[in-house]
Image (cartoon, each protein chain N blue to C red):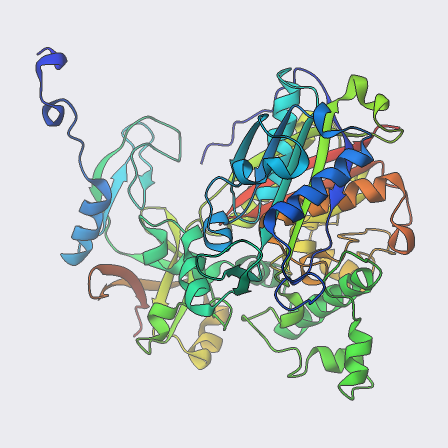
Length: 429
Length: 146
């Protein structure tokens, strides 16, 4: 493939001045939340971002709506039209987009383009997915039922190329374990060592999730081990309570499907201080997309997108203080962090085992708990990561605040078999 | 000839690339495209060259000779249900054709025991299996030693 994209400079710098996010939850099983709808979730997250940016709905000029799968999960194909009235933006311009589990990262990219171009000054971008359920037949949106395997399983393949790859079959089967398998061979790790690394990573992600009121899984593995009668949590992590779902990934390294929404508001950096004392500048966004038929696609696309964003910003991996990775495939977290240079080549697995990638370590990754603990509301996950990055950079993450206040955060978006984005944020204060 | 006086089908009648590829598999042929500028193989076949970015490609046929470079087993989360339903033993892996192009593919006939035996011997030669899926024939692979 041709790798010749050099990012240009935006017409004007863009900053995030407001953030909003619902908890990631299970609308089907949680009695408190059962009955909430897509419009309400997106609308509440949107209004929270507006409050955070000290603006009213009347001030926002345009919005983007992201959703990984609005047709199956929500029985609609133009969710932007259907949610606009929920937060006072009737009649304003908007756009729906859908890029699988990378949707929330591309949501930020789209909004940045809209402001950087000069077309708009105040843009809201959000994403919402209700991943645990589906419409209960042809009924109003508050009536939802659990997503059935008869609907879910055939639909999962819809992210793979229907001309070839889906029916040649290898790509879909390689999706979860290709990269960790390659990494294990390149670094001479035994299956047992890989298991230990992934279990340690999940363990520390859950420690962060336990401290995050927006996370869907908040019970620590220590507590779960104790309940199951294990004195040793690492023995529990390798027990039938935590079974292998793929060759390498146990349940603890698999994403927890959730419902939720997240949003942010972006404006030109030159006026950002009118909205907040702590604007977060979006320095650049690198992009690469590879279909699942391409071997080692996640590693390749991550490297391409990272190079673009480092070249554009002049920053090096040594400048990065915090990394967010869309890790619905659990192993992606430290693998992507290593690929972008945040962890030394071939050494990332040791950093995980030593707890250094935990929220309270010196190389924090996903202090919100990641997809395995924070949860995975598909399209909304990326903007939930933006929400966490901004919260950490403002120093507002409470008991899960990373040790060093991040000046620069690197976000690696991934999804839809597969879109990749590499985003660098800078604390603009 | 003036385009404005032609029928639509006379004016625009492109070759059916995807259909030709799958029909080729039915006949035991692996069709690909070749870049006239850089010579790279475009597989599976598309319109332009993804290796150098040239604007067109032309038909060629693959030899079928290939090497298995890496593979993974699937589990409950990523099993290929169409293969499980047929009771097939398989892995998914990187297959590199002798023409230089690599894809993620399905390799039949490898169970856990066999997988352990060959893991450290990769890359290993594989050959194509034209597998009848009912309404279409697809391309899988098999270890040569089988």
